[in-house]
Every structure is written in structure tokens, then in C-alpha cells.
Picture 1 (cartoon, one colour):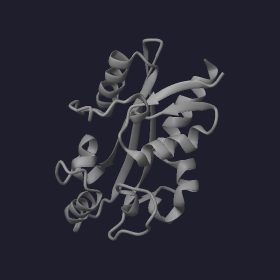
Picture 2 (spheres, one colour; picture 1 turned 60 degrees about the vertical axis):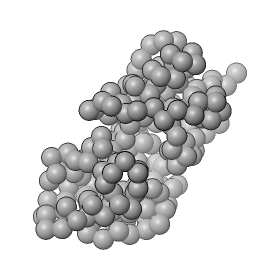
Picture 3 (spheres, helix red, strand yellow; picture 1 turned 180 degrees about the vertical axis):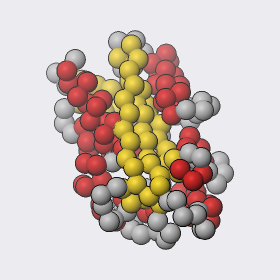
Picture 4 (tube, helix red, strand yellow; picture 1 turned 45 degrees about the vertical axis):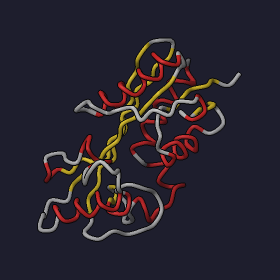
Amino acid sequence: MKKKFVFATNNAHKLEEVSAILGKKIELLSMKDIDCNVDIPETADTFEGNALIKARYIFENYHLDCFADDTGLEVEALNGAPGVYSARYAGDAHDSEANMKKLLKEMENVKNRRARFRTVFALIINGKEHLFEGIVKGEIIKNRKGTSGFGYDPVFVPEGYSQTFAEMGNELKNKISHRAMATQKLCHFLLMK
């Protein structure tokens, strides 16, 4: 019998990406599938903390095995910013365009372009909590390139590649991304259970 988990996110892009990575091995339920229409506040100052807040909310209120993630871009020259504020870097509207514009403006005359994407998943299964992390290092380019992906994908080139996440397309991105790494660790753990 296929294992069922709720992915505590309202982000359709993330749901699609993780679903593609998990494949047919695990049945993924969205928050809509369980009639949860809450925008769970992310009030922690770490990715781990925010992921746990969301997973605990689902587990405590719906008593279902679940996982949640928090993901962000950490730019070395900006002391790790935007970090946990990546989605709302330019304001509470979660506007990717505005966030990218703000980032590129702040990076205008900066030589050190090193950055990393980081994803942390918090899994709650049978009441026990587990954390999984994925990191991809790379750099911020000066002008956006590409149309696929979401968030900061058009301005981030992963180490060892010449294209941005937005240029490479979902198939390759889903193999090498921070979310892919964290999801593979999560999937491996679930399939060993």
C-alpha cells in the first residue's frame, strides 16, 4: 500500500516539483486535499524552525503524517540575506519579480557573487520529527536569464553549470536542486520505513 503524506505548502510550484521527484512511490496530499486553507505563519528565524512550525500545525490539527519545507537563497556578500525572508524580501506580497529586482539592485557593484540555495524539510511521521537538508552552491548573475522555474531561478547559476535554474528546465533542475537533494533524502528515509 502506498504511503500518504501531506505536504504542508500553499506553493503550487513546490508541490509540483516535489511530486515529480517523489514519483509514484508516495501519495502526496496538498493542504487543499485535506481542506486546510490556512496560511501558516513562518515566524522562526531559521529554515528548520519555519519548516517545523508548518509540519507541526498539520500534525497537531489534522493528525496526519506530513512534511513541510522552508527554502531560501543565502547570498554571501549580504550576510546570508535574503535567507528566511526570501519569499518576502521586497515585501509581504511574495512577489518574485520585486524580490529579484531588489536583490539585483543590492548586488549592483558587488564583486563577490557567491550564494547558495538551501532547503530544509521537517517530516513528522508517527509523531516523531526528522529534518533533511539540501544545499546547492552557485552565484548570482547580473541579469536574469530563462523562463522556467520560479523565485530567484532566473538569477542563480549553480556551481558546475553555465545556465541559470530558469534556463535549464525542470527536468535537469529537479535532479540537481537543493529541493531535489532534500527530497531525495526524505524519500530515501520514507522508503526505508
